[in-house]
Length: 71
Image (cartoon, rainbow, N blue to C red):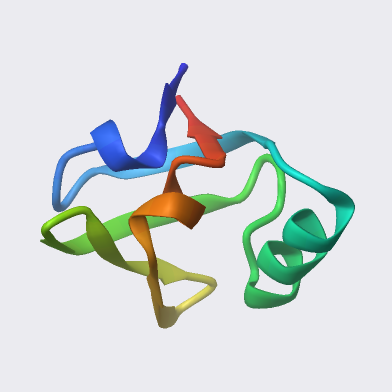
């Protein structure tokens, strides 16, 4: 299992865990980042990511992406 920032562009990954405070986990959950959910990395801009989650493109910062553990 690795942080989302280490996944490759175009790769489909499964979310295994979301780290951080309750507020952070709630924020990411509202965007569609839930455990066992699948996401695809669309683009990597210096660590800031654009991902496809639940058929919606979402941009997240490197800091937030490091809190999402995927496999």
